[in-house]
Amino acid sequence: MKLHTPAGARKKKKIVGRGTGTGNGCTCGRGTKGQKSRSGYSRQIGFEGGQMPLARRVPKRGFNNKRFEHNYQVVNIGDLERYQDGDTINYCVLLKSRLVNKKGSFVKLLGNGKLTKKLNISVNNASKKAIEEVEKLGGEVEILKVA
Image 1 (cartoon, rainbow, N blue to C red):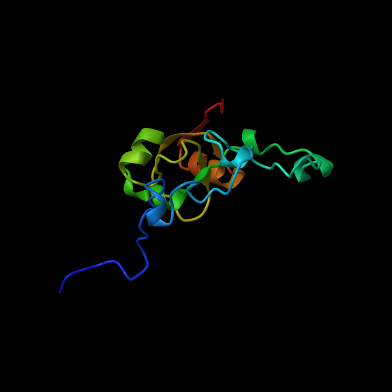
Image 2 (image 1 turned 135 degrees about the horizontal axis):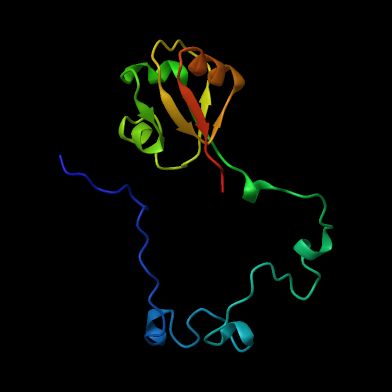
C-alpha cells in the first residue's frame, strides 16, 4: 500500500505572465492599472481604506502584568521520596530525574504526599506546609531569589 496525499491537498501554483494564450498573460490576473497592479505593492496590516482602524478606534483600558509573571513547575514532597537521606536537591537534580522540564526554570515545592527522609532543597518558592514537613525531619528548604 502506497501512502499519498488526499485529492485537493496540494494545489498547483498559478503560472502567470506567459502569453495571452495561457489565459493568465497580459495583466496576469491583477486587473488593469492602479496601485494594486504594480509590483512591490503590499498593504499594511490593519489598513481599512483610510478609515480609522479598529485598533485605534477602540479605547485601551486596564493593565496587565503578564510579561513579569513566573510560571512555576510544581514538585510535591511525596515525589522527593526517591532521593537518599541527606541529599541536596536543586533544579539540575530535579531535571535529571525528570520531575521538571526545561520549559520553565522556576520550581515550587508543595506539601502533598509523605516525606520520610532528611533533604536539603533549593527551590524558587515553597508552601508553608512543605517547609514545615521538610524542617520537621531535620531538612532545610532554601528559597532562591527569582530574578
